[in-house]
Length: 140
Image (cartoon, rainbow, N blue to C red):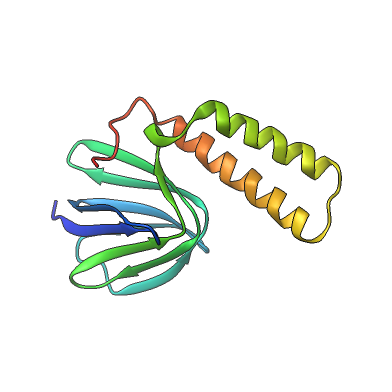
C-alpha cells in the first residue's frame, strides 16, 4: 500500500502529521475514505469519529466539524477539535451527556437548545471513540 501525508489541524495546533495508508472521516454526505492517489476533493466534515490506518495500527479521534481537503501532496483535516481516546475523561463525558439530556428534557429554546444539543452530540462522539481505548493511542 502507498502512504500519503495526513495532517489534522485545530485552531490551537497541529494534532497529527504523519504518513498513513488510509483515513476515514465523517463527511456531511456520509463517511469518506481516503487512500493514496485519491482524486482532489474538498468536503465539509461533521462531528464524529476519524479512523486512521497506519501499517497494522488503527487510531481513532473524536473531531468537531470542519473541512477535508485532498490534494496531490497531502490530505488536510481542518476541524474545531480533535481528541484521541486517551485524552478523553470518561467520567466527565458521562456527566456531560447526563447534563445535556437533562437540559433537553426541559425543552429549552434558542441558544440553550443549541448548546444542549451540541453538548450531547460531542459527548456521544467522545463515548464512541472511548470504545477504541484498547487500541494504540495517536502518537504525540
